[in-house]
Each structure stands twice: as structure tokens, then as C-alpha cells.
Length: 309
Image (cartoon, rainbow, N blue to C red):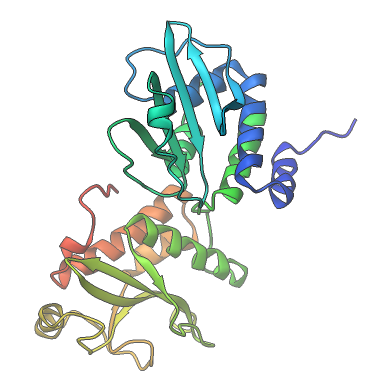
């Protein structure tokens, strides 16, 4: 008998059911089908509670007057305690009116962006939920949970680092996605300047600190089989203090490319990791390369303190 590919099922489902209500419906269905997932979901949304929430009365789309809550329940351990969860993807409506209408309730808000609504709300992100669920030892072997993770990747736009081999041209697009994934973890944003030609495959990124920006190119040179980071000799692209350090230290290499003036190359042994390494080491290698260059040009403060290798 042919077996259903659960991950593929959820990937196709995400192509059609990608709105906030769809995400809530599918999350609710999994809560009903899997007691452990329901406990995980509810406790994740209310992380400050000291014990597991004891509930079986989770309600989807609870209506009160003109308000329609995404999730609502009473904790059995605290029967008088109402709890509600608001699910968002891009919508920025925080429903502050719920604080008065549900004055006895604990409130939770989960979205694919970070936000501070106030002390009355427990706020979190789908990316954090995804990471915690993926690493949960009780649930990570469940096929439906695995498929749900694939669904979350798509509908909440979670970028996931994937194993690659830079000696294979078919992996270039994967490398492109991976460096974007790593850069976003380092709080960098992308820049839409032209950054690809027949020899160079990468993109520009922007790092910000104290209202100052550093623009840089990160990618691979196909001819040299090298991963490179480059900076322009322009104060509109790199602050003057950092440019002075670049010029003084002269740790850069000379490359004839219009994508940057000062180039730094990933050590050959590190490049080899990207050609024949495991996923975790590949991600770590790219992150270490970026951090090391920023430290060498006096831009360590542009890297968030929370970043771990």
C-alpha cells in the first residue's frame, strides 16, 4: 500500500491555506488530535506559568459581542482564569480592547514579528515557536508535527538553513538562501543593489548600529571557488571610522570586481566545510566568517550580543 508523504501534504496545503484563519484552524486541529502538542502550544503561549496548563476546553473562534478570539479556554487548574490567544502573521492589530472586555483573562499574542504590547500580554513569535517545537524531544518524532513544521515554514515565512555543497552549481540558489537566513539571524537586512554576474553569486546586506549603516557584499566567486565578503571605499556604504581600520590593517585581498573595493576571503579549510560538511557546521562557518570580519574592521557592536555560534 502506498504511504502518504505527510510533509508533502502540508507543503501543498500551505499553497492554498496560508491566511491567519487557516493557520489557526490547522493549529487547532493538531491541538485536538495530539494532547502533547496542545500542552506544548498553550504552555509556549503562556511561558511565565509555573506548571503545565491543565485544559481540554480549548475553543477556536470564541465570540463575545463583536469580538472573535482566535483561541479561548479556562485553565482547569485555575477555573476562574480566562485565557485567550491571538494569532497573527502580518496583521498588526493588537486588539487592545480585549484588556477591558476580558479583564479576568491572561492574554497571549503570537506573530511572525516581534512586538511589545504591554505587561498584560505574553508576546512571542512563530520563529521561536517553530524552533522550540522542532527541538522538543517528545514531539519531534511525530509525523503530523513534522508536517506542521513544514507548513509553518511556508505560511509564516521562516527561512531555514539547509545542507549544501558549493562544488555543485545546483546548490548556488541554496547558498543564496542560506546566507540570507544567517544574515537575518544576525539582524542584518538585505539590499536590492545588483549583486550577481557570471563569476560572482551573492547579495548585499545592511548592518545597523546607533543609526549608522554598513553595507557589504557576501557570496561566492565561482572562478576562485571562494566565499568572499566585500566593502566599498565610500562613507555612504561604510562609516569613516571603519574604513580607516580597513585601510590601516590591510587584511583585505585585491580582487577586480565592481561589487566591492576591499575583499575578505573565507579560509580554504572553512570553504571546504561548505562543500562537504554537515548542516550545523555549515551554518556556523558562515556566521563565524561574518563575525570575524566585522570584528577585524572594528564593527563588533553591529553584531547582537545574543548571537551564539
